[in-house]
Length: 244
Ligand SMILES: C[S@@+](CC[C@H](N)C(=O)[O-])C[C@H]1O[C@@H](n2cnc3c(N)ncnc32)[C@H](O)[C@@H]1O
Image (cartoon, rainbow, N blue to C red; front, side):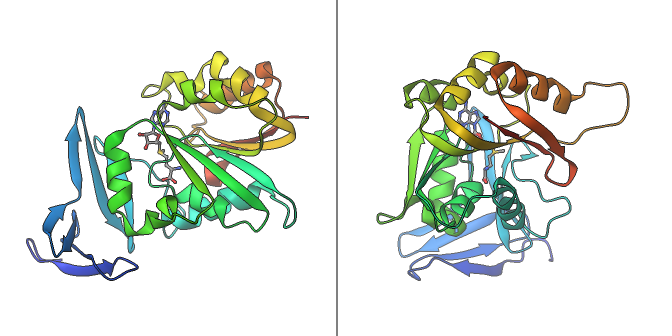
């Protein structure tokens, strides 16, 4: 796209907001005026178009995995598929790190999912998700997603024992959110999971060299907390595990 040129991106479901893009930023235009969808609040948060779907960047780092996927929505669908949620039942799902809510929304579409609880620590991310037309289902009044503001590392302590049948844990890198990789957090996660619960834990890409093997480190921590059947799926850059 030529520098400075804007193209139509999409419209909100009710038609009141028109989204445009210059290929780098997203802009939302309504009767009240226009806003560019980026926020500086300690860190720099920005929506950027990727193959027709917005992704979230924090300080230039992508928060959705798109390598090997056409859009982040395809990644989320595949993560949820791998959890093997049955078609019948009444399940409660925990999505620890909301971001734009793509994994939470994908889980909420499973017919047997009664409720998805999703946590987000950043007000700026919640604001951008509220603007993002692809995140609308997160905030639908008659929907089955509950958005909780705060750190998952704290919120987890308030969840009942055996509450969740499935968990999606898609945190930022360990250096950016160590509290979401701590033994104390995994212990709480195990407690809040039902027997037989399955979890997905994003860990990032794994090199073959001598460097830090985050999949092994996280796998060991999950095993120490009690999780079993731990396996790394390279395409999803994450681990599946189970509470037996
Ligand atoms: C990789 S993104 C999650 C992407 C999300 N699964 C999606 O589908 O859009 C990680 C998110 O976790 C949030 N986050 C960071 N620390 C957190 C914490 N302690 N508790 C909850 N959310 C946190 C970040 O602000 C970011 O939005």
